[in-house]
Length: 603
Ligand SMILES: Nc1ncnc2c1ncn2[C@@H]1O[C@H](COP(=O)(O)OP(=O)(O)OP(=O)(O)O)[C@@H](O)[C@H]1O
Ligand SMILES: [Mg+2]
Image 1 (cartoon, rainbow, N blue to C red):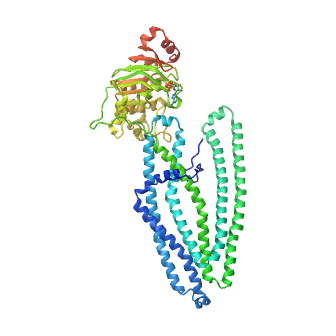
Image 2: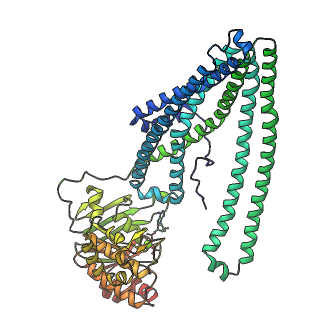
Image 3: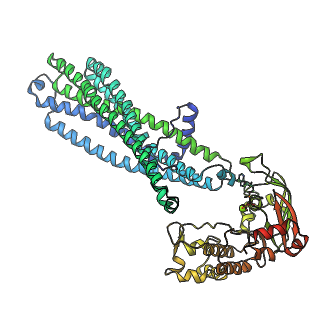
C-alpha cells in the first residue's frame, strides 16, 4: 500500500539534471509569468534586503572600532557609536519592510500560479480517456500529483528565493571579506566552505536514514490498518497470532532503522562540533594573529567573523537547494507528462442552440475490440446487435463474456478496432462526446456515491436541478420514503463518511439520478448479488418507470428483467450466439435455456 507523503521531504527519485530536464521545468515556471510584475518586485526587494543584510557585519565592525580609542586614534571607526547605531536601526527598518513585502508578494505569486497549475492538471486528468486510468493505480496517481505539486510549490515559494538570497550573500560576502583582508579570506575559503559542504552531504545521509525509519514505521502501520479494517476476516481465520508476528517483524525493522539513524546522527553532531567549529577556530586564530600584528582592527576582525558565518550558511544551503532542484525537475517532468497525455477525442464541436436529443436507436455492426492494455486478447469478435428507439434489449452471458465491454463501447470509453457503433443510424464518433454521453444514463452494478448529501448525489444526474425535481425523481425511483425516514432527509450525508446505504437503496439513488437526467438511452448493469424480495420489488418497479419511453440496454442478471426484454442477446466469448425473446429462446432449447436454468434457478 502506498502511503502519502504530502510534504517536500518525499523520497522522489532524483533525476540527473540535464538541459532538457531544466528546460522542461522552466516551461512549467511559465505559470509564474502571469504574475511576473509581482514576482519581479519580490525578487528586487529580496536582493535589496540580502545586500542590506551584508551591511550588518560591516556596521558591527564599525561599532567595535568606534568603541576602541586606539582604533579611533588610528582613523578607524570614524562614524562614532551613535551614528552607527542609527544606521543599524535604519537598515533594520528597511529590511523589515522588504521582508514583509517579499513574503506577501511571493506567497501571492506562488499560491496563485500553483492554483492555476492544480486546476489545469485536474482538468486535464478529468479529460483523459478511460484507458489511461485502466493502466494505472488511481490512488497512486492522485497522491503522486499532489506530492509533485507540493514539491513545485516548495520550489516556487521557497527554493528560488532562497537560492537568489544565498547567491547574493555569498558573492557580496566574499567580496566584502576580500576587501578587509585577502590573506584571511583565503584561509577562510580554504577551510570553511569545504567543511560546510561535507557537513551538508553528511546531513543528507542522516536524513535518508530517518526517512528509512519512517518508511518502515508506515509499513508496520499498514499491517495494523489492514487487520483492523478486516478484523472479522482475521478472527474468522484465527490468524491473530500470525498478524502479531507480522507486526512484530515490522516493529523490529523500525527499531533497527531508528538505531542505525541514531548512529549516523551521533557521528554527524560529533563531526559538526569538531570540524566545523574547528574551522571557525582556525579563522579566529589566524585573524587574531593578524590583528596582533596590526594588520586588522578589532572591528575588521568582528566584521570578518560575522561575515564568515553568513558565507558558511550560504554554502551549506546550496547542497540542500541542489537536491531540491533535482526533486523539482523530477516533479515537473511528471506533471508535464500528464499535461501532455492526449485527452479523449471530444468529437465534432457542439452545435449552438439546445443540445441535440437523440431518439435512442443503437446498432453495433460487426464490432471487433480488444483492450489497449491487452491487445492480444480479442474481447469482442464480429459482434452485431440492435435496439430500435424505445426498445428494451438484454445481454446475458457468462462472466467475462464481454457484456460490460459492450456498455463501454456504447459510452465511447473505448472505440471499436473494426466495425461500427451507430446511434440513430449515424457513427457514434460523428456526435460530440458531450452530446453522446448527455443522452445516456448509466445505472451501474456498484453505484458510485460521493461524500455529500443524498440530495446532491441524486442531483449529480443533472447538476442544478431544483429540490422539487430531485424529490420527484426520488419518488419515481421509490427512494423518497427511505430518504425521508432519515432524520436529516435529503441532507443526510452518504458516501464513505456518511450513513451506509443498503445495496437496494444505493441502486434506487442511482435510478433517481438517471430519472433526473431523462436520457434517451438507459444503460443498466444489474447487480449480480440478489436483493431481498422486498427491495427487489421496489427496484424493479422503479426501473419499469425509468425504462418507459427510452431505449434500454440491460446487462441482465434477473429473470424478471430478461422476461420483459424485447430481445435477448446471448453473448459468449465476445460473440452473439443466440437472439430472440425469452419465450423464443426457451423454445429453441439452446444455450439460453441451459443458462436460464443455471443462472436464474435461484430467482
Ligand atoms: N480494462 C480492461 N483491460 C483488459 N481487459 C479487460 C478490461 N476489462 C475487461 N477485460 C477483459 O475483457 C473480457 C470481457 O470483460 P467484460 O467486463 O466485458 O465481461 P462481462 O461479460 O461484463 O463479465 P461480468 O458478467 O463478470 O461482469 C474479460 O476477459 C476481461 O478480462
Ligand atoms: Mg460486467
